Image (cartoon, rainbow, N blue to C red; front, side, top):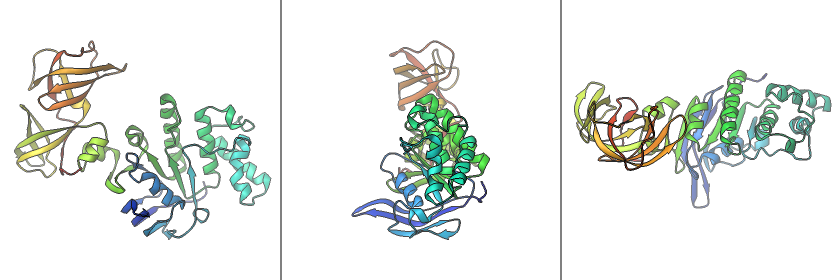
Length: 357
């Protein structure tokens, strides 16, 4: 890549469709050379935000800057960005090489130069030897790589991905997401990436912007969002948290002693004072024991059980409410209806500062 990566900045950007506000006064910055994921449920505004970066939608108000240049009123063709679409949008009647060379050719480059650029990018994504094939002769993962090569061929300042793995099977999703991340790092690309898949976002991102109802619910590193959710929505959306009630019974500087239905644990205080709090308890923090408690525990009962190979997943009826638990123990699967003793790990339990989600 010969161009330097560019920053992307939103300054109080709003997008309305008639009386519907799809994006509501959002501000953020994507640093040059970083991969930032826009994450959220359907209808949260993440894809509209991506299309605003691309110039496929125009902001109703606010400003959009790419590389410090105001592009708010520029068309998609006037912005130095490329998008990899969910459907890949490959031309079925063109070969792999012709698909990738299409952009430079349309821009008026000589045919031999467009071909050289296309071959270079196909080699970059590991598709040497497949140049003459048609898209229909490729696997889903290979088609995805062709789409990435076609987006890279013009060496854009910013690369955009719209749900790029949604058409792939589970095993291939992991491999292709790793490929995208490795390529982004190796080429020092600025990438805005849209997904609704929490695990995918946690795996590929430098930063994640969680969106809800057209607004930013929280922005931070994957670890910050997982360990320090800003509100109930983020706690529930990232990592399948169990939301439970507890009481801070003692302040210990930056930490607090919290009692949850007879179980007392110490967790980061996060500004909470003495009294009732809501907590996000990750499924791996719910510890299940088949015999009487060796530590503080409450009794519960297995409501549902599922064996997934490397671990088992349980829904457990308890005094805290119904808990989702992931058990990586090597013991036999707990049967539905079986009694269990429930305790909580000190890790992966977080006080949620706000009761608003």
